[in-house]
Image (cartoon, rainbow, N blue to C red):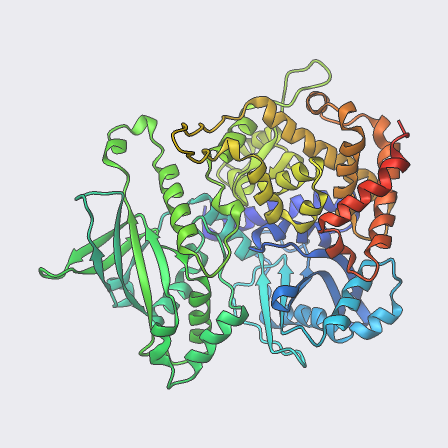
Length: 613
């Protein structure tokens, strides 16, 4: 299948998922944004809203204010799924810049928007926050989320009066497609530095104790222009192995890099100011230069930059803006990973892909000191995650009419895994059979699973913070399944506990409860804060009635009995009222992320709701 056909197949599957979810809630932009957000490497998730004024060309679909760094993120969605068959839907820079301007106009017109807003609507919060923080906001990131392919990838420049730094980040279907493929490690690729770029790398070898150890490490430098050309040609393939933080040029660090590159007198100091890049590769054609410790790197297989994202992004941006990069160099470390000799001789019992992933995960985590790395990505290769994935592929969903089982839940350990799994199968019978066993509505991602778990276990404030924080806490609470206990004097280290099928079934039961509550909340047409209301309702349901609800029974029935609907409605209504009233002058979304908010809801609700059953 050629590249365009693969992209089209991916696009149709992706849009079909959005359309299925959209038909349920009557909106397309919101589910599309929700599908894209897991791909955007953010520790905190935005509050999702829906504000459109077509006559004023204003639109906003989400926002996030990071008070610690005085940065505001604004999200705007372009969604147009019904396009010409067999042609990639392509967007140009002018088209997408107009959507960026729609988000910009929300910011610049915040005062008039606030005057028209009712206190009960979500966009009131963001408009008020903008006015309250206007003198503190230093940076605005506008995320344009589009259902089209932005193949030119030209940078979009935008200015906002009073804001020092404005970045426009385009998340298009081409970016999502490439990230999904990179997550699965589908295609190996070779870079021939000498033949393709006329500039083989020269690096020093770090001595090994053994002739053939786990790694070979080289240190040296790479010309900035060559790094920019490599990223221009290979894009996210260079940065998506395990850490998966797609390059973004943003923030104070990036500003310093840009300023150094712009100033001709400062460029030679770049290597002194910058920490450089760390990279890994599977193999390479590397030759020693005479009898020295200097080596010539001619080719590399699956070369991945695991640390130095801001550096690479800034160098590439300068290159695209025609800044002269001659004389600019970046420190570089290259690690070649070797499969252990004893493992090569025992192929039946050794998964060399898993070994490489584990090694790269550790190198990525330890090398990365400037930028936070998503825990959900670093820990995706733990045995715990792999075991959950295996159970999802092995356990059939119980049928309620005495027929044989037909379908399973699909746990997506890596982003885009489900759609990539579909694309690997031949169109027609094979794909149809796969979807029958794994229906789209039965796909659950690792961060979704974590949010459902944390809500049910009494941490709705953690779920409200978003998938990454929820996943981090989920892994902490389940550390016995993936982390060995620490050594204490002469005591033996405790072994990692293996999860059983019942554990997996109870994970899915929490997801079923969340879906049950979500369906009721959506049917109530409550104004605002839907996600927070769902998390708090689920948590309160367990807090008050958990002893009466069997997770294993929910797995067997694949549903929560309808008798709970009235109780859920009452809790949800109280949750919304509580969140609004208890927030006071605070932003409701931010208030919902605090433990004090949950403690207050327990105190207020327990007496009121305890006698309902």
